[in-house]
Image (cartoon, rainbow, N blue to C red; front, side):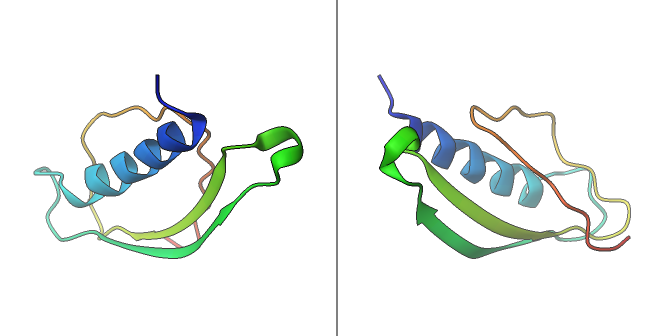
Length: 78
């Protein structure tokens, strides 16, 4: 059985791959890891937070996908 950390890492990696590998997009997407840290072992032992910057060109569409962990998105512009 996979640990929570592995599931969260897999989810984030899947997001980055899906964002960068869509055949529907007219341009290239980019991904950059900004921050990665383990969460406190008090209640979230084995969990990790990863912050990615994803840049999508106009008209970009990613393939349908799911995430096994928590995902929070924030749009900076566009």
